[in-house]
Structures are given as structure tokens and as C-alpha cells.
Image (tube, rainbow, N blue to C red; front, side, top):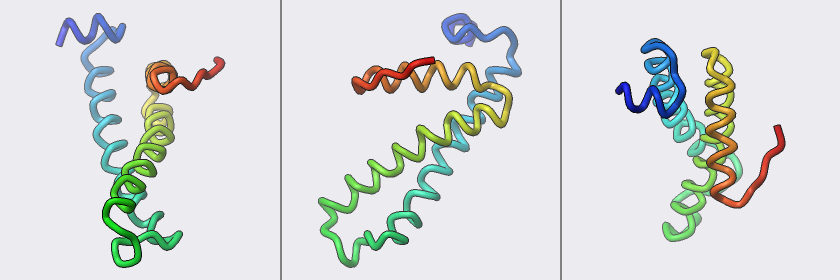
Length: 99
């Protein structure tokens, strides 16, 4: 835990707990919103091949995850940490974000 706190530049254990809480609700929320969103736009397993549906579901869940990560980070007072993490993730995909 100390090693991770040092790597993430976290000063106290409460920040650590809040960060993991944000990660957990972000993951759950992105899946809970992704599936109804696909249904809303007419993409379901009933009318799409599973080889198309599941990659689409993963793509939309990933997009919602990126949005929710920054939103929940802001909501719980850890915006700067999650914004920096978001920029790092997007750089790995070849997307550059200005401050």
C-alpha cells in the first residue's frame, strides 16, 4: 500500500480509500449505463450478432468509464488525480489532451 501511495503521490490513507471507491463505482456505473444505452439506440442481442454486440457493448462501456472516472473523481474531491490518470490512459491510445 505504501508503494502505491508513493507512486500515485497520495498523502494519506483516506485518499487511497476514496480513489478505490471511485474506481469501483465507476466500473459498475459504466456497465449499468452502457447496456440500457445500447438498448435505447436499438442494439440488443435479439437483433445483433453476439460478435458485433459484445465488442460494441465493451466500446460503449469504455467510453462511459472514461467520462464517469473524471466525474466521480471530481464529485469525491480527487479530480486532479483522475484527470491525470485519464490523460495517461488516453495517451496510450494515441489521443493527446491539453491541460
